Length: 371
Image 1: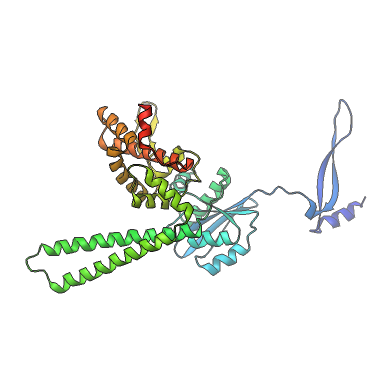
Image 2 (image 1 turned 180 degrees about the vertical axis):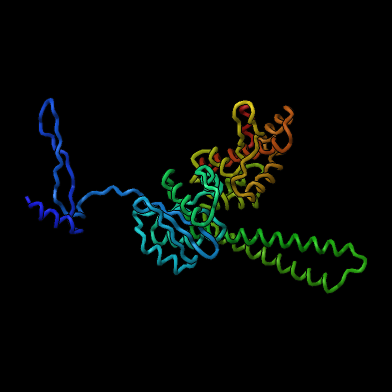
């Protein structure tokens, strides 16, 4: 056994440490404990490290990150550039750190993919969750550093599960869908301008010709992207799209849009999670007899997805037997049109979840068996 002086010198060496253990002296009535120090190499000591959550506030030009160390907040910032992000991620322990940030359009894309390349886990938090969490903490002043601290705290308190990046094929399809949506808006705007010029007594030929040229170019680009989108569709994706198209009310374009946002539904455990993700789940606030707000949909999910589902519901309420019966039943009870349409969208989502999870095409006549 080393002397106290030798123990002190060894404790200062980073390669050695002390592992405390409790010793029972064996007295039946007066149980005493004494601490025994087992001198062992530090690398062999089993430390149960907790995950270090690092909150990252993402903006166009910079990343503000915050984490706790010895009870104190460490706040720093780096440029939102690939080289700067790589250098910072190289310093992190992939088995110990987990990033927490908000999805901010395309600004978080570099951080997300570089973290995946480095093997560092990350979690994405909805902006509304972080905003209301900050209010619940009593923060009256919100800036980038405060937002990063809030995200790190959310990770610590909620023990967030790691998120996953979309696959290469899915990422390419998403970019094509975004471009198609922008080009479709541009095409509609050009058609509206040509219609407006057509109402003039003497429309200027050069103006009309220029708009027609741009319109023709836009339509050609839309066709090329649609063909390219078909090339990036693998067999598994095509199977899901075919199942979606089997649901009465969902056409090819609607199926492609739904596939873009929902994928193969592998990250949804039940239809309730799917409905909540799309933002049509009802939310209300009731407290006692004085606070009773009117129920409304949460609108937390992608707005374009809800718009696609609404257009599909217009067809489903006339041709999908289950959706038609629900719509007519709610309208007969005096429910307004929009509320009935939200219910039809919910029915469509349950049908989508069922056919994709069971890999069974939709049977419109099956509803008759339950009537």
